[in-house]
Every structure is written in C-alpha cells, then in structure tokens.
Amino acid sequence: MAEDRSYAGFIKWMAAALLAGVLLTVLLVVVVDPYRLFRLVDVAGFNAVKPRPDHYQAQIKLAGAQAMRPAIVLMGNSRVDVGIDPDSTQFGAASRPAYNLAIPGTGVGTSREQFEHLRAAGAAPATMLLGVEFFDFLLDPERADAPERPPPTGLARHRWRIDTAFSLDALLDAVKTLRIQHDADAGTMTARGFNPLFDYLRIAREEGYHAIFLQRARENARSFSQAPHGIVRTRSDSSAEWRDLGRLLDGAAREKTAIHLIIYPYHAQLLAMLEQTGLWPVFEQWKLRLAGEVARLNAAHPEARVVLWDFSGYGALQCEPIPAKGDVVHATRWYWESGHFKPALGELMLERIFGAAGAGPADAAFGFRLDAANRSANRDRIARERRECLAAQPAMFGDAAALVAEAQAGLPGRAR
Image 1 (tube, rainbow, N blue to C red):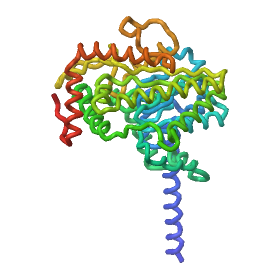
Image 2: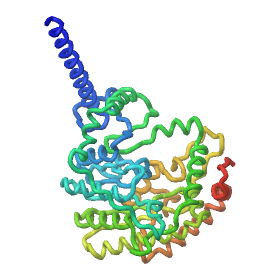
Image 3: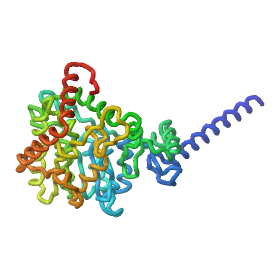
Image 4: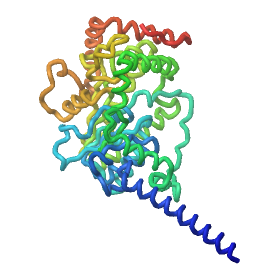
C-alpha cells in the first residue's frame, strides 16, 4: 500500500511538473511575443526586435494588419515585402498608418483573400498599393486551371493560433527574439510587416553584390528559358490569376478603396533576359491586358480611383551598374539583385505615386501612368531608355545573353 501511494505521488508530481513546464513555455512565448500577436510587453533590448517568421507569415501579417486597421495596405510578393517600407514619410503622419501585407512567393489570389478578410472584419483600407507580378500570369494556354482550394474550416482554420503559442517553433522563435535584439544582421520583420532584409547586408559584405546578382541571374536564365509564353487560357480567354485580380479590384472599388496597381521596376539585367528568352512581346501583351482591366473597372465603377503605374524600363535607376566580381566595397543603391529593389527605390516609387516633389533629374521619368491610350508613348519611352542603357553598359546586355545561352544549352552559368 505504501508503494502504491508512493507511485501515485510520483505520477502526480510528474504531471504537475510537466504542466508547470508547459505553462512556463507558453508564458515565455506570450511575454516575449515573437510574432506580435499578444502585445503585452514591448521593451527595447528585450523583445522589441522580432524575427522574420518562417511559418504562418500570411496569418501573422494579416493579424497585425487587422489589429492596426491601416489606412493604406501594401500587397504583392517578396518585391513589395522588401522594397516598400510602410514607415515611409510618404504615407503621412501616424494617424494614417500603412501596413506591408506582401507575402513572398504568393500571387494575386493571396492578396484577394487578404482584402476580403479585412473587409469582412470592417477594416477595409482607404488605399491599396498592389504589386502585380508578370511571371505569375505566365501559363500554358492549353492546360486547365488547377481547382480552387476551399478555405480551411473548423479547427484547421485556427490551428495557426495554437501553433504560434504552443509549439516548438514558437518556443524557438521566442528564444531567437531574445538573441537578436542587438544583431544588426538578423532577419527581422517590423511592426508594420516590412522585411528590411538586414541579413542580405552580411552576404553583400562577405561576397559582394556581383555574387548576389549572378546567382539570381542564373536562376532567372533557367526559369525564363523554360517559362510558357501565354497569359490566358485558350478556351476562356482568362485564367485563375486574371479572375482573382478582377475579384480583388471589384471588391476594392465597391469599398471605395483607392487602387494603385504597380508593374515592378525590374533591373535592366532582368529585362535583357526577357528579350533573350522571347518573353518581351508577352510582357507587352500583359501590360496591355492590365490597362484594359483598369479601364473595365473604371467604367464599371465610376466612383473608383484606379491607376496603373509602369515602373519597368531601362532608365537611369533600373540601369544601375552591377559591381565588379570580387568587389566587396561598393554597394548598390537601388537593387539587391535584378528582381528585388531596395527601399530607397521604393521611396521614389511612393514619391511618384503620391505626387511628392523632390525627385532629381535622373528620376523625373520614373513611373509611367499607363492606360490603353498611351501605350505607344510608353513603348517609345522604354525603347529610348534601352538605347541609352545599352550605350552605357553594353557588357551587362552581353552577360545576360551569355547566361541565357548557357542555360538553354544546359550548361552551368559562368561568372564573367
């Protein structure tokens, strides 16, 4: 009997110890708050700097936006995530907050879901900046769209809430939060959803920007060489991407949300690869279709405020020189690599969109307000810029052609 009581007491002690450990773990996660979901404590040097989440980033950002109820939302993929800072002075005072909802690796369908969630929560923004990705719209015209996945329901819908408070990943991210408070190169996410990409700075210091550009250029050469050359399905003259875009724009227009569609400012190296892989005519066709979509929306919703901005081209900014191989001293000002621009360039985009003064002579033509009527003028602009960029940097065009040729031949890329 004594042994039974001793065994029962041991079991109770173990259960109590286990429960205490679980509660302490959850308490640590809640207090440190690596995802800004609980907002109980925010102390500089303790937990003010948050790590960039590897899991549930879409849900975490959406929760942050819903809590903040921003007047302006920034949507798109990784290009917006790292390139447009919601703390920019272009957005005005703190009474008019902006939030970066962009999620890397996602398309316009994710942006549509985000907007619908905000609207259902009574938090529809007054202004939306939406980056539209040309490469997301490329498809095989003869293939059918993948069936749309139904949204999660029941417990599955809230599983992320459980995992961000009670999981090993949450505990590790809480510990990481404590560890990175004074790490200038840590991968972080700001309170308004922005990824400053500090971890790239260390890579740039150690390897140089040439290596970063070259790695992405090799990836682009392979990807572009294999990309399909359609933007709509043959049978429907549409696709899931166009339908998602239409639903998002219609919903935003009904909410009287001002809409700024952004064609990204790809670096000249990337545009040169579009030319070499035969994708340039498709790029032009895609722009024309976007302009038509904006015209349709403005006709259907006369009260809507919808603008299409073309930041692509070969201007002085997009034609930024790439540092030489082995150069770890000189840094680029506008681009991380050919596909991702820096917040400094994002700031000029915001100046153009919101009409602020201050752009220098080299920036005066940056950002073309595109519609169906002025597409010829836009093509002329880009052709003129290309001639100037080619004259200034012929080696960049030659390197792009060589990398594409090597990719198409199945050979590894080579530094030049």
